[in-house]
Amino acid sequence: MWLSGHSKPDYRTINYFRGKRLKGHIQSLFADVVRMLHELEYVSLKVQYIDGTKIESAAGRYTFVWKGSVEKHRAQLEAKISSVLSDIDSQIKEDQSELGRDETPRPIDSTQLKERLSALNERLRETGKATQKQLKKLREEHLPRLEKYEKQLATLGERNSYSKTDEDATFMRLKDDHMQNGQLKPAYNTQISTEQQFITHYSIHQTAGDTTTLKEHLEASKKTTVARAMWWWPTRATAVRRTMSFWNHSR
Image 1 (cartoon, rainbow, N blue to C red):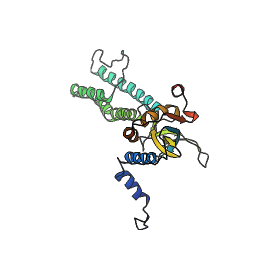
Image 2: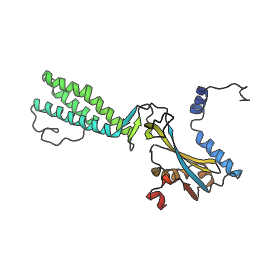
Image 3: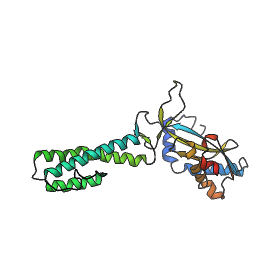
Image 4: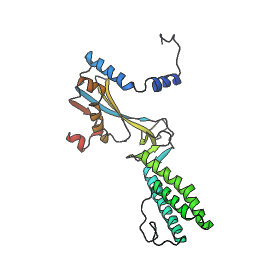
């Protein structure tokens, strides 16, 4: 405050400085601070006490995308596309096409559908209005929806949900707020290592359960700037009980 002449920056200024100026440097600055704490003998870096907390995202609460719902709608769309293609093949009197009625429907992706539409357009230039109408529906309605579902599944990865306005956030059950609302909210699962009340390592996860984060958190601590610079990693880790699983306990 003294350096700024006692002027008070608003949150936009702080956010700009954090997002633009510090981006790419926060990890190294954090490592420098931890290294300084070690040199001053505030921490030994031989032990870490691990606990986690879920941090709510700024995304909207009702912007969720659920993996089960996407997979269900995609399967329904693929069945509809197979039926339309089969009808078109029947109209042009082709025998047992790739997507004939007697075949078991196979999964269809957007690239295959584009190629199929292109081939059909070349062969069906002189066909009737009904066939052209079906082709138009495939191209303008079904294809964009199939591409949307593919993009959503790619964004989901191994997760079961994400937020449309913050695709990195996963929906998790947080503690009840002051209105006793305990619904699922977009959030991040943050794991923090401490020693002598100083934070020595942190990691951010997209899974709600702490049992799945401990291994990744410990392995990440070996790859930090501090560990690489000092050839250091803790010889003992103490975690809260909810992180325990067969893998965690056996190690």
